[in-house]
Length: 321
Image (cartoon, rainbow, N blue to C red; front, side, top):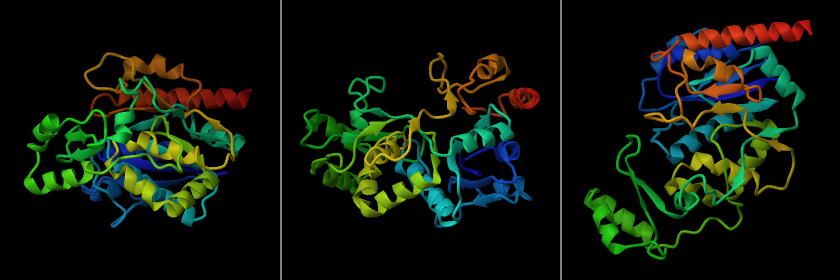
């Protein structure tokens, strides 16, 4: 069965090209969304000659802000295109700074052996690992961007929320121009309640879902247009948008945890960890995962060489066995 990839990118065209070349097989296909704030031409040039690559174009390119619904919208656009093309097999969601831990033939064989399994981490909310409120402020408060810069947003509870304070609200509103203040007031004067027809679940952003499951999700969104609209003011919706849909549908396929390794545990200036050659042993030990994030060729490109060699050696030993 083919393996199809949705890749969200916003930088490093050459790194994206290397990722695609490393994963590409005769059966694979790549649906790539490049943030609309970024010039698409360098990405197209870097991947020129790749026959299995589809770049999302206007009006299906989104201006992405951190933790914003635009990330979800980009995934939906790519998902719709893959389904419309009748692609079979799994759709695997990656970022442009991900990289495989296994050889592409092994990855293809893995999905061929798990054709009826969805891989997506899911857990009920509230989840104490997310915040003091278990992450509920992400869903129950209104996220309003001040700009598209990372972390440049504010959360506003509804006036009906027990945590609401007019004093704090007035202080926050000063950060916005008058027109935006009036818009925010129009939001917070309404009750904010998670849709009753959906089961609230959280998890990691990255997943690998079957084509059949993607079709079911798209039907859900068509039947419930208010679901997407609700999340236009949710914080980091990519970490619960699809999980909540999946658990709101009648059970269909077994669900297992995601296949992308991410390290959020190390004390770093910024998480998740950006892996370097010094982390090779840690990555080589992740036998339950097919991919990892994140990598940056400006920081260390050698780690990608090490992973390529490791994957090729593992694949040869598997063939010998």
